[in-house]
Image (cartoon, rainbow, N blue to C red; front, side):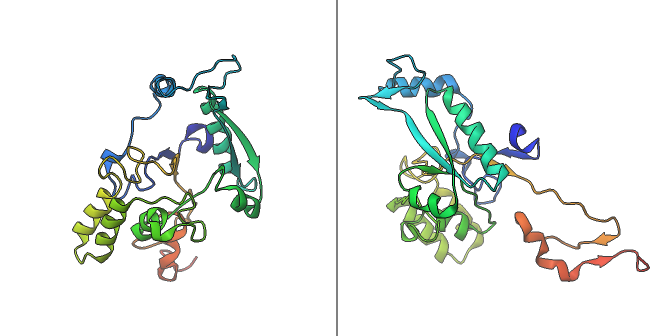
Length: 230
């Protein structure tokens, strides 16, 4: 976060870490390089030829990572991700490309994407429910988990706000699986970053809705000047 966003960001694990429907148990301990190396070794991934890349059954731990080069933040995240993967003996080949090319390759390779919404329907249901498989960049990794699906459906049909939030959270980790990193981990979430805006001192923006990105513009018609002569 510091290397790419110079501070105004935090590590992200589930895509909804800061939401009321987050599940802390679905997160994992981050940054334990030695533990990660141990897991790879126990799984049969070792560097036998001394090139710094582990392999198993003749297959190198190597994959392509596509990103849109017009987005400096995603390019920077991809670069840092690739450098950190080297420490584990994993080779990440960076591929800057347009979205048409990314779409054609994101089923066989990785891609840097961004998801922003305070709505669990978009941030959870559309990202992980089997009904949403490959629906315009939603659930492009074709993730499907019947137990998680069932909990998400219950959340969608619940008429109790607190119960719905609990069900969304449960869907992240269920029966040892689920869409959280402690479960099946269909996504590798990296960072939750803040947008920075400058506002004139004489502008009263009123009460802001909860959300990310440009959501604060929802009430722009209600903004007023505190200095009527300005």
